[in-house]
Length: 193
Image (cartoon, rainbow, N blue to C red; front, top):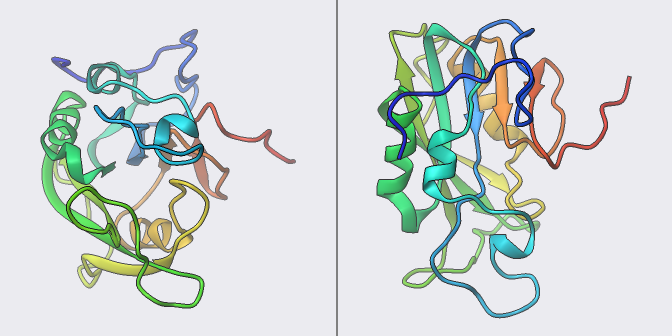
């Protein structure tokens, strides 16, 4: 695991963030490495992208953050303790969770994979450093949104984050660009002007 959060510095390959402002909100959806493997050509994260060990995630450099900031860390149900280890390694204290109830294209509750129960949701840990200001105290802990491409998070999630807290906003392990956000990720397409 990691002791304290390691801040990315100029010249590091993972993230060039030293010329950006300190961020107040950070989203991270790491590629968790599972201890098992699923059969089939498309099942499991390892068949879609490079996965990371818990130690690699704990040691991953994060961008500079304001003294009072929030982390939104997506976790997987089989690695709850490990996710909280990452939260603390990055210097945050867990405070709450968001639950994305996944919907199919027809609006029905998603019928996903799972070893014990069929996954119909994903969970995001909300954690803080200091006392970040809250924009709205009426944000619910559960939101419904359709399932997209493998592991991509819905626009509704970003709207929840923007309703809950103030920017500047950053996303680690991003798979697409988002207007008004600074996004870092190996899978990002080239940014269009």
